[in-house]
Length: 221
Image (cartoon, rainbow, N blue to C red; front, side, top):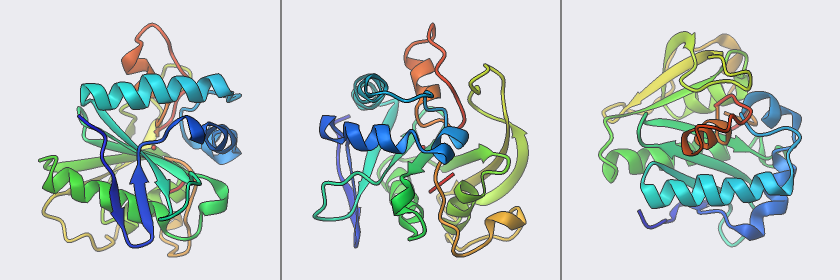
């Protein structure tokens, strides 16, 4: 698949590049991103380079995973990352600390879901986040996902096990209004978090089965 841009008023999703490496390194060193995603820790420039070449470029070229950088229109500053894995229909994301609290990732997730249903032909999109990842849950709730409960994660954790995760599903036929039934801590309308499960680690495992990167699911933790 040739990379493409998704955008709406106040938001632009485009493929990240080498100019974004400093921003990626800084954001992936944030404690919340480390806690709630599978990014390597400590995170170095080489990790960002690997991510761009072996996760982002590889994912687009094979059609397995589409990854976009989150930006505001007219700005080159990378604020976050969102990724759609086509095989499992699941979405992952993280947002840099300075960009949280503005609803950016909920809108980014909505943009990606819109594409998945109208152009990608997917019947649903799945979300999961480590139990306690209130920010990521708040993003999914605001984007219209229905909470489906707790279970082992789709992707391995840093220790190789399957972490306990909150799970949710968005159907192509859903009206996108926030649903009841989510963990109470995720329901604050002002919570706009920092990580999701596995934007980096699981994809790395898929591309290189012999290399176990550190793991959790790519607004917000």
